[in-house]
Picture (tube, rainbow, N blue to C red):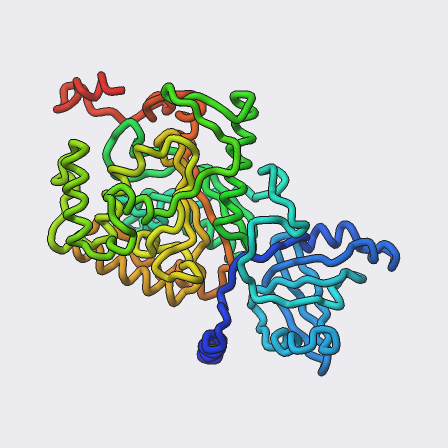
Length: 466
């Protein structure tokens, strides 16, 4: 069975088909359709018009030139009816599907199933609009996300580039870690059939303390099947707009003396364009680490920055140099809402590569008032590519990168069962609170922030720091 599936995957790739797909414009959910149309008359069914659904195939029954299938989404199951005389050449693609595949289907609704399909699609990316070609305008209008709780103690801490806090379970003699992100368990739930899911939870990272960092903080993470990072940019603009209207009564606010305008659409800045602009280099020159190093030293000298703080050596990868340059010279200029997009693949081990440039991924980070407030991407759902990325992270860890992602076999197994095309986002609640309350330090929005013990080195400076 596994060999046959692998052979089929190789054949699809040889035909130029992206077997792991992308965004699909779902217009209805199975449960909603049953609630609306079960028991309806033929005339009432005619008013439904073309519908688009997506989900996992649970059964297939072939009848020569027709075929029935059951597709399950997060709300229920709906039957599909495909006919060769309607689909034409597309019928061969339909009967080539297997139980367990994810599909997107558009067709007419009749007596509990979709019939007369106008198309059966492997999930492909289109622009961030709903099925009626309307731009999403309200977070609440997008859909209902299910709230869940996932483990705080984990055998393998993953989902972020961070060092964890370690602990030990005595009864099981098991090493455990406090979670550094919510991501990997939430995506396991999407694999299990929860198409839209979120969690607001505490995160623990064994890192320094600053005006923007506390080792214990609160994160909102949410995941939406059949969406991509473009959808989440639209959703994020809507979410922040709704928050601003509720909290400050409009789409403008002041943060640390600077006016912030939240009216969409927000600026987009390509990551490497930002790095190249800060260094005064053409983007093509960023591939050469010696050129980047020399330009970074010149820029640091001009801005009064000590480049020794980056800790670069002759073996430092160029992508780490890009990150340090971005953090030092680009972030401080991002005052108005800005989506930094198209990150290097090397800096994004869990994100899906761009279709037209595999060196970049479909990812964004949101900056407002010089604060990084959100991180999101189209999720990598190809288990083979994910394993390759994890193995690259292991090599980075062996070379001394303590924040490199560990290899998680259980998560890879979940991807092998099938993660539909999905987009996910994390928003820092504490920094969000800083923005809307105009507070300069994260310790002012956390009731009990971590502080240095009294009398310790640096305590006096810490107590008087902003």
